[in-house]
Image (tube, rainbow, N blue to C red):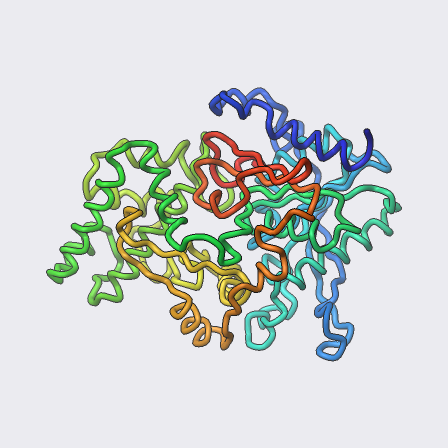
Length: 457
């Protein structure tokens, strides 16, 4: 048994090691060699690839190009060994490279070349520089263009490196995991296999229940304490009562807000600000402290929150844990620390948030809402109609529901092959993905006590 199939099975074996009837323990990681620490730091080289601007329209920009950033290391590579390619997602490529140690551990075992590619319109891969987010320049930000970028990059780099016969395995987490799945489906001639970690390919294609995501965020906290859901719901109700009494000064003081709220719009923003904090804690509920990537977080942050008295205190604590872990903010500016967008789970800040907001207005469907019935949050609807209105105003586009399902098969995956779908049972995105194996080579792995793509970390 050789080539890509042995790599695929080896990856499967490593992922499933210890996941059955054995809770995650800190020693599991402590005693494993970690390529990102000490003597095992991966020597990535940062490079730029001359990439086509528009792969699908010869008239719009001719053969115009842009500089696409990627990271590469051959320190583990044995010639004719495999190529591990990370399909970059909605952020700076270094953030993913520095938080995906599993890929490097596997590369050391399999003597693989490792490449992390940055997604167009994110990080420094801006096709039109600072004008990339102007209309119509942003129109070239699509899943199809990103996949074509990766297909062209892989093909050309294999030629440059004399690696024409080397099998390519793609890896990705979250949206990047979706892209890895799509790469195997769309370019099976280029990609031999894929690991889609925490890849919500169903929910982002408009399949499933709009209440699922925040129901699962709630379940993460409820698993820590059965009283938690009721306590949080009660806390939000107390906040709502203060708002109805227009006791805005009390709210401003309690939450250390920079400005005193003055309208229902401000209270809506505060609710979103707080709900987003719960969401991030649930996603990043890792069994160790984190110091890089989205936020600096304590070990098991959901438990940290619940160590405090279950009352209004529970939502007063959140800004400090999520938005102010460094202690730099003397007060909280609701509108600068959290920006409402077409993704109710949060778009982040800066240029990267513009790009993701646009994607959530076009192909990626994220009509998730809280209802205070199946979840612990205030009722905050986000319907297709609301999404359409927002997107038309913000980006002058009308979403096309169902396009991802049409283009990338949704749950009709029976003719696909060589894909691993991994999900952690603490991850609110998990139930938007594939949780059951579909065939001998479409394999689902469920990770006990695993948060958002914990396995890649």
